[in-house]
Length: 83
Image (tube, rainbow, N blue to C red; front, top):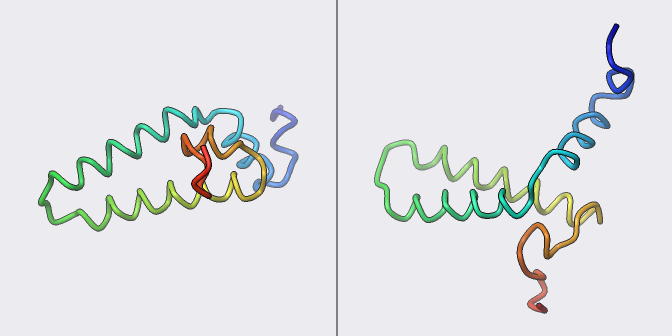
């Protein structure tokens, strides 16, 4: 028998899992490491890595803009410049 969460629409399950299992400060550090690495590398697949960074940005922006996760938790600062 499938768990009850699989009876929900997939978008709800996906969002729930993103919110439940993402370590936002760790994701921020991982993204920062990717960006730092991009400045050090000169490989033909840099565009693909930039795409991953943009995807992470979109996820971070989305959860903050929707009010699901606090801005400081996700970004380590408030985007408006306040701290």
